[in-house]
Figure 1 (cartoon, rainbow, N blue to C red):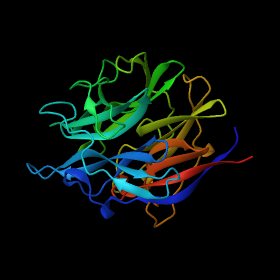
Figure 2 (spheres, helix red, strand yellow):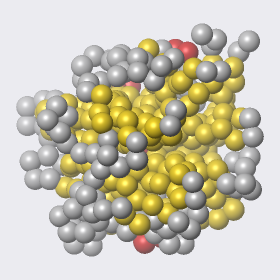
Figure 3 (tube, one colour):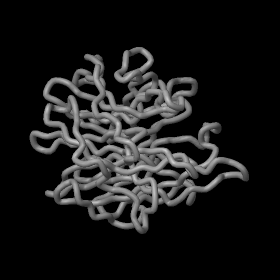
Length: 323
């Protein structure tokens, strides 16, 4: 296949420069674009502090840009979707928040998370609907549409959905388990990318097993898949890292990966075909993560987070295809 290159266009949004809803501060994680006739809305997960214990809560906001993704038009003054109720799968946060149009509606596939005792978190994929053009969303139900199952026992998350060939198709991640990387250390998680299909966007049939080969070995974590098509071939971008010591060792943190498919069933990993690396000392110099690809006016653009998991915002890169 022809070599593809991402041209970095710089940081697009820094949450520290804006007033965010619900007392949120810092963090604009997992930017997800929804294109309108005259602007682009980018949803992201930001964080407030739980007054009961001082821990973070993940909440959804958005920023509106012109179609060229050059000028910020405004930031949401309201919370897009409230957190779930006591004991629900999304009680403590929603991250990420992936949107797709469905006729007059906008569907949002949410990753809800809640705290655990023996491990830090459990997740599931929920569904919310907007009928006002994406200003506010309401849950279809209080539980997830996709969660832990017999062969995918934990950490089902990061649902990315598109309507292709008359069916809804989802790419998501599932956990393979928790393990401490060293004696006495807190357990860390490992997860892989899977896929599922649906006729209505609610009831999903999974295709068991991971669909993207590991590059770092069995302890590789894969997250936030996003799928798009160029010239009849489907491409997937995602981020991947080591399971352990990724917070304190830059070389073990997230970077962008790539796979391609001609049939949406078998995927071939080929990270070298679409490399993206940050500049040392820049906002994305040590980490690139949580990608989302959108086509606007013939341009293929990738929104992504940089260092510290998006604490200081998100940027954009443009795809250039070498001839």
